[in-house]
Image 1 (cartoon, rainbow, N blue to C red):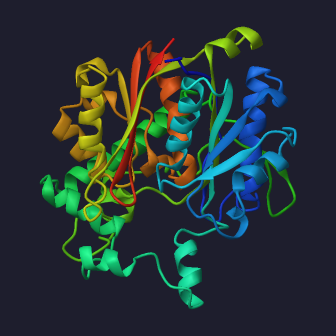
Image 2 (image 1 turned 90 degrees about the vertical axis):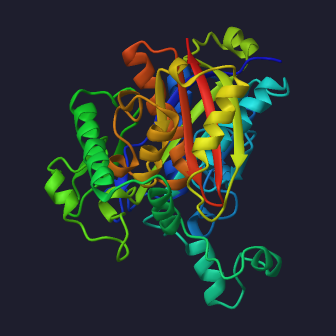
Length: 390
């Protein structure tokens, strides 16, 4: 089977809900990522054979195939197609895996995998709420109800269930959340994100133009006492807003190419796709899937936890990476080393390729070889991607 290589990765700095990116249309945000990948590689835009873009709320400004709309908003020619993927929070990680599979199959040589989500302009849950409010039903079918009677699938409840199942205390989750902010602060101040962030021009209320290139969600004044004082999401629970990922606007992308394209376009590979897989798991607890998915992925790849130099495990809620660390025996110093979604934000469909950009740069900075990325996804799903830095 042919190899697939990553030759460029980019992301915007995250914007808080109603924050610095509130005036950016999501198609235009996605276009920024596409343009930056072309700029980084120098590849002729006409050579790009597809754009696979993750997006969760495909309604309103993110409807009618946001991937194609991002292409039309970019400097890519009309000949470049685009398709939008929804695997919930893993949408752009799935986009990356689809792109890699296209290259590995030999049917394509240059593919962009990307993701976009404006959670300000297209709020979370809108694709369900709008039809329901207008009499067009809801996603849970009668046969699903028969199989899961009186169960409301909820990521919030899933996060609590994970915490309970793995015996995680509120203090543990709060301490992890504080560490996420501390790592994100240190990474920002050290310039660790400089190589992966593309700046965006924004205009403030006074009409002044500036460049947005620092993740807006980081609380530079975060304290453990402050995090501990945040109200629980439900009485008797363990999760708070401070131990949950932040609502975020953003876009990201990676370019995946074949060995043939490396030679034809004079490209230097950043990493090789070493393994890709995914797993369906219990949709009720929902967020536990990265654990068995990673166990299976490592077994299929003939690897052990100790072989992985760095992990990126999406911080949808603190209970997810904390349970992951405890169950798989991962060294805490190898996971989310530059902070995660609790500090940096979780722009849903953009998070997959966003995390890949961060993983690539963190491996480069530390001289690591193998990196593993995974994330929990609505419906009890998890993607796992293992890369080898070159």
